[in-house]
Image (cartoon, rainbow, N blue to C red; front, side, top):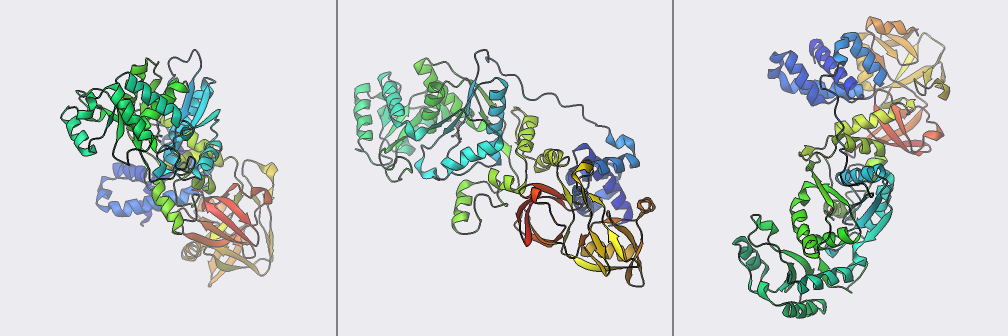
Length: 559
Ligand code: GLU
């Protein structure tokens, strides 16, 4: 990349990083660059590559340094263009008598990043109004249950900082759903349909009733009892809740409330029940019986809400306050539980916490902080517009939490050894954290023959430019094919000398598992025992969570 291109891309990458808590978004940077120099549009590939590269470089820089450098280019770059965001977490209505709220996951696997929105928004309001949080495990589709999920979901909620007051498992409540079905039959609001499913749906599309719809409550009871007694096979009969066949939305016209499944073995109830409630029936019943005051969930439930409201109306129950936020598209993530479950079985993934996955446990393992996820969703708020989840924004929130607390170390990926001539011993003088001198320093002493590791790219840059500063160690010049010590004075940076990170040759072997499943192998400084399990910042490389310490350090790349 040419020096001019580098300069302009770096300017906007610094600005973007400074305004976004240290994380620059390459796409936004490209937009700014093109805005200033429209001629670059014809070189968009080159500009994008430069933006990717420079944003990645900034990732390993301290936020303070980013801000200082941005200011030195032009202080105006730090002015926010957008007005401050208004509070997007609206106040809820009808909270005088407290709130009861819930999340209602199906136990098909552990939670993934997509589930965290409903978990956190509801938790936020329950805490705000000092209410009650119910975790309702909706396990009434026996085909879609992973028995381990009953344990994993509460663990994930705990990690997310969600306080659960009560756990309800729907498979404990079959008799309740049957009882409601019987009452609906009594009211004339439900029938047992034995038609072919496709025929029934076709009739509904034409706003027409199937022959079963006119059956008397007595007939319906008889048929429902036969369903319960396993007198019908799977698909031969369903209990249908009546709505309005003239409803403009065909999806709302009559819906299946209970169906037969006599092939699956439910992990909790075995083959004891063959008649399973469908979501709209069990959700409406439980939302009422558990006293839900506010139901906040995604827009994908809008039609379900309309269906469920019929049940509330038939029984004269008070409806909760419903709110549906927009769809969330999650890019670059493997989320589908069936795909992941199969991948774990066939050995493609190491488990539900495989760092390539979008599960909460994988994200936690990498070192994303639960408060970063919380802050992300509270910032997005309750709006009903559809959004694309931004990993960059999540990383920005994460960095905001990590920057002030993480210890700094050097890690050199794919190390190349250079010998430093012209000095007998060198002392590293690097703080564990630049803002917390009380934490101490990394102060290893290296004696002749002085050898350090650098990345091949940094060695190449050093040789081409003829100078380099090894961060917190010394300055070097490249002379007659050798790296020669030239002092320790910082002021060389003002003369444009580039800075490189390094590691002692006798440092620790270190392997960093990247989110794409590849491994970066190199050498790092000795890590304090206290940092085991925590995130550290490998300067000029990025954040990583230390997973294991022994002869070798094993870490997971955070961002
Ligand atoms: N179990 C439903 C689901 O996971 C949620 C039901 C609801 O939120 O009403 O989609």
